Amino acid sequence: NLELASKNPPFEISSGDFPIYTRARFLPPTRMDGATINNSLIADGCQIESGAVIENSIIGLRCRIGEGVQIRNSVIMGADFYEGVESSASNVSQQRLPLGIGPNTVIDGAIIDKNARIGRGVQITNPGNIETSEESPQCMIRDGIIVIPRETELPDGWQLKA
Image (cartoon, rainbow, N blue to C red):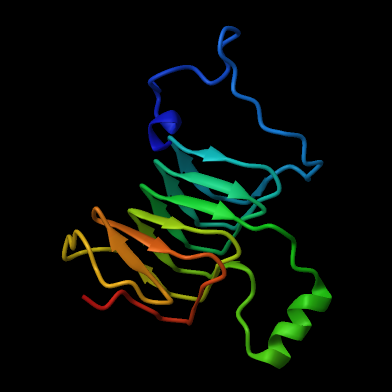
């Protein structure tokens, strides 16, 4: 999938002979404010804050990406729903993080499944080049790729322990 985001993809997704269509979801357009995006695909309904850097990645539906976030070589699946003001207020009382990726987080070489809640300053990287790890509720590594399961919540400052 990441090769489709490159300058010269293995095939053209808008080819008249073999087009690839997304289904209509009636979402608002993605809003970007001072972000840098290279060789990436961004789905509808995202909000990408200032200072974010996204390279060689795919960003799924309804992603909320905070200020100063760095995403490289990753697939972020997005969210199944928007979290409204009421839900955010409820999260505070339940001590839950907001849906999306918190400010100043670094993600490199990962697949983040849907509805993840990632805190501020989280480091989702594999500096030790681990090929396979034990499966945990928060993450696992397969073929050197970090996988964050659906509905996972990573607290502020979380880092992969190798």
